[in-house]
Length: 478
Image (cartoon, rainbow, N blue to C red):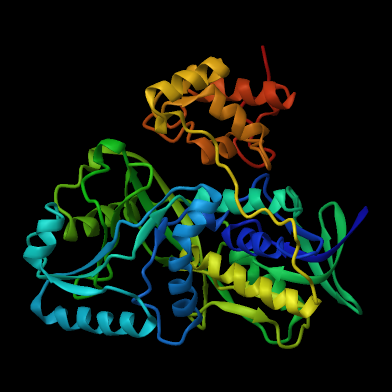
């Protein structure tokens, strides 16, 4: 079994692990990200609401409140630096009776104390002037113009690519089995190696309690909280322009309805605590519940245009707050545990906070050659006709459309495979350039995408997987 040595080992290649890696890559440290799947963004980070929360509902003084507001303020600049999709579309929290307006006022005051800017309470008519499809039963709403939407794949992959370009090593298909405290750090036993590290960052999502409890007597417990979602076609994408929440009230908590940065409409999630940390199955009853609750706040949602459903797991810690600190009785072991909503929003701020803690403890100096920017995959749809023609002239593959639903070209797919931390699976391509994300859900483009992936990676078609090894699409040839 091979042995590897690092200053810092990060367990988990989700948005938190990649944010910490990117910020740590500013320092003269040898860093690894250990991810059991074949790609980053393969767990909780791939299946969530994709919301950049404003920060009005987090408990005052909590880690959630601090990192939410900080992360929200960082997102626009980070999107420019790392070239991923982010839109500050604003959010609305609806209430349906005069008795509930006091609840909005309380959210308003809490948000102000948390540092959220420009909050206001609107009347029902003011809300409907902004969003004509909001229910006639709405009497008021909290308006948060700093709320936004982001591509969770794009954010996570951008952080990972930039970290990798700055020297971070990504150990994919590497599963941590055991963490052992040693005299000079930690030994991480994996499926194929022993990794020695002076410092460990525990960003393992729903498994963060497992690794924390291996090294600390102060136990934590994480419950997987499952949420089901429905994604609608782009024809429904303009049904609302803001992210629409519902104030918890007599009818229950409700669900959100939001546009996505790619032009779809998304609604969900449900919330059910489960025991199985791998349970991402959708449930027909829960999906019906999503539709029913979504209709409370937004009328005439075209549910006939649903193109897919999915489920994600949130890492809920019983203390109901993030755990972002060095373990009290395990020096050098840093937790990023219990990172549920607003974890996606908070990720950039958590990355900075933990990186600074570790750098100070390691007495690490900053690099002079840190590269803080990254160019995303060229999207021909965003070019002018002349620019697109010139691109195709230079590389004819950009003129060959593979995914008709999303208008994804062969050139984009090839780039997604051959760039830093390139895709090695169909889902990896899907998350980078959206081939297979449209109406047909890869029914037409899947075979051709497989051919390109096999060609570019020198593999046989039978070896191409949907995602993790073992998820082969083909089993043989006749």
